[in-house]
Length: 313
Image (cartoon, rainbow, N blue to C red; front, side, top):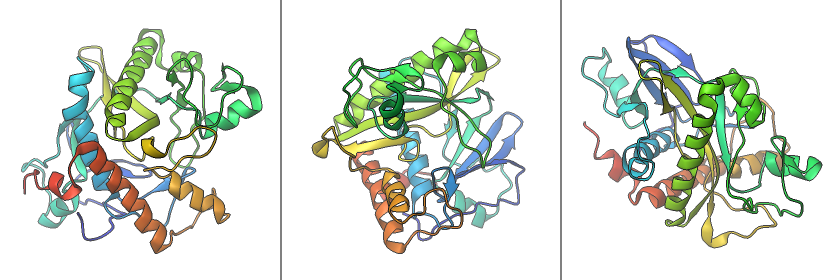
């Protein structure tokens, strides 16, 4: 594990392409990018003033596990953007910068990004539960009456996309038909089918390891040379998903979790939801880090230190 919390990457040696809530993206070559996950954390679309130890490393190493170990076997033909976790020696980085990036960076291919979040929900919780209680719908899609909080959708997981908002703005829930208008008729069904297939495979894999994958969000790009849809960004992490302990699951109430729902609940209980300039207490930082590390070990079967030891020095 890392010895300190890294909330800023701030490479001086490479051109910065974009900076998000958690990630910083740099140009590595004309055809590749360097994606770096910091330890910053956001909740309710607001970035907290302090970070969570090892969070960026967990996101990166867990994404690698899904993309290179789990999904190729369970989703045949899936194409993704990840090339390597090791920084090429050709990149002009200082020794200090290379050490800062170790375990939290990915070299990826560049693709044209579809401007939607491809969300799949297997259980009714969070904003979907709120909408359902008020309107009987989820992302505008009618649902059966009588559902309980955190219940699995009776017909199986559903595709509930959202817009992909610029930094500082909120994503907006949309219907699959609205997503179709954004990405185009040619690609809409392929994106929906891929998202659902990946979710189903990941749900089965996680459940075998004591974790319920309640919902998750994916991002996809287009390989314009081959006209293929490509899975990009982070995948099936505690930042992009809701993970619940299977042995404590019961519908009709909130669930314990291995993700940042713990942080959301703390913010709400302290009257800090949606407020800027908030710092976590040391206890909340430690508890959040422990949940991320627990999820990582359950899903990969190894500790973070064991995973990091496999990287090139």
